Length: 463
Image (cartoon, rainbow, N blue to C red):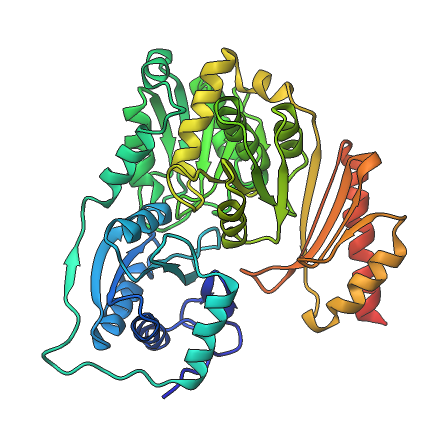
């Protein structure tokens, strides 16, 4: 019978995300996986699906459920085990698969998990394909395979080694120079899948590593989102160990956040800025990012005479625009870097290598490299707000603020170009909240934009 999606399940182009046990259960996951396998076959994409997971304690349970669901509709399963999400996506392309399923809730806390659905071309489902699959869920009851036509399960233990080789082969990297520099890196993998991959990558780059959170047991010692507020312990490790740089990744290793040599978190937006500078120096071309990313990426692109294009928030939106524009680099301000020479997905491992290359080229400390670009303060808040009232909220905010350049392609983004400031208000695709993001050269102005926006949203709910 068609699947009924329970309240509390976050459904978006990122897939299906929820709290373990309610509403995300093994029974639901079996059904979703079976439907995805059958959908891919009905669409003519094929009958092989790659599956991988991060280190969450619920991961083994949901992995078994996903495999069972796929087998039940005659889908062949390539089981990668615990791997970074970008490793899974690269493996999906490598195997010529119909698609992939990453079992990960990315930056969400440990009580969450999710199925992130991947196409055979190595991107997440875009809005059009996601809508078709959701309609399939509502209307179709997948046919189950007979006993002698169940999908087989094969293991692929070489997915990460292939990914590592591809990163080390990026043309922007001066491997001998990086290795000779022998960076001392402080590393925090928050006990996610990065604990298996990041140390090996850094070792291959000749780094000395001081680490925390590299035991991939899924018991996150802190909020796993690598925002500055969550990196106090990494900052302390940088200072105590004398590291050149601190690197923090989220549980599925698609986001990278930086800490400078003094232990100061720099924010996730600078990851894309520094990585882009490395690429643009060699290969000028279009850069794509989303509406919530810092203006510093505009400054980087402009300095190399390149165009900066913005899309709606969402990795697949950035990837599709990159493909359409022939972009040479792109990503999101959450620490996600997409390098098209590698693949069209955010990859914290590749981003780490590019950041080290940037430090090699600059020849000094991370703080010095960052100081060469204009400085901004970005403020991010989450507020509870009924999504049905958002059209009224957008209208109120547009009318209430001073004249601004408005973009309504993804919520509401108001920009004041003369002040180099902007405000973005949009519903989250991964949490039941509305996000308020503002940026300005001075912190007081950015905080004021968020505060005023929050107050006006509260006024709507009270009224």
